[in-house]
Length: 407
Length: 92
Image (cartoon, rainbow over all chains, first blue to last red):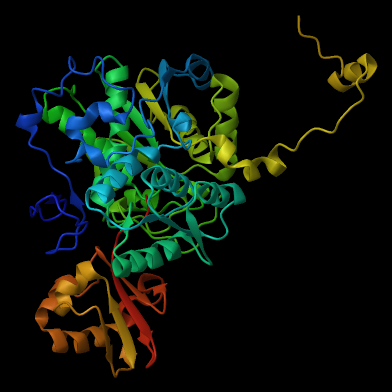
């Protein structure tokens, strides 16, 4: 392990923070040792899960793995969306179909394997919803107690799901950042493994498999642009790390993809930081957005995400909630993929960036659609209310359809 | 007494002590001066930048509220306040 800030090195132990500068640690690999086993010819016959990239995942003992078969999700060519947006080549990396319906199953798979490797007595997380379900499901399979700290104000489906998996939900009267703060203190005192807190360097490794899969599914190539939602910023920095590792292996083309991050306008601390001279996130005390999964006011990896976007000539963007809902609708109606609002944020940013030229028509773009729309039904209660029933007669149907003719 | 809680990764700055009290009233900056006298200059060097600002990787909470949303190092600390020092790790 190595500190991302001061570069101090550590053995692969249960440590998340540099003891010298308190900066974040990241896992490093002996790339030369991996080279023979991780190349474009080595993946045939491997399982269709994130574990197909085993050499670049930090699990020392395979017995720690509890496999819910996360990852290796479809990369869908989005021709209808191309027509609607005015792009030559769009792809959707569809992580709505993971075991608990979001990309969080990836980082959790690695973190839980480490928790088992180290025989931790319990696991948990601080969550805006998706991570709660992913952690609770993996903990159920691992037969570990699971404690989920989340804002009590989350929409009911996101609090119910982790409970159904057997997790204990600790509903915090406050924001995500309040839940995160107290979760850290609980993990610290009780010796539990909180996947996105004290297991964070290992957890982060799971997310980079989105980059590996994109590379493999594009025929061992990378796109010109990747658009990713930003919560803490860790997904984006993990993508950057995955790309860097492919590059060290001589497997990634140059230049690297432009990394574009997007947050809702009502909670955009990383976007404001990207626009600032010092590149530091501007924390938001009270997020105000329908995109709960991105409502992190004090993003732990924001500074590094800004650095990654700048280094790759990407950019940061913050569409409004109205644009985001329209983005969800557009994706559903053109490609048949129903995303939670975070995915609408990605689509909305693509649309804005095509309109003002920040993304060129000829650029090959991959959109990371990281969570399933069925997890956020409350968002649509007002925007798409159920229709009133009509009698089962031809006349009533004709009247209801109002003379609409199809064929 | 002001109660100070230090997360274990940061406790290297307080010689391993994770919870202690000081008889104090004043600003957060002055409180850090008092703690620095108690634990030596390494506390100051690890918690504050060379220019005296709070370090990016350390979050300070006064009665559960992020000091950046209060008055930063000028935040008044009452005699019965609780101050938490945590690494800046947040979000999935």
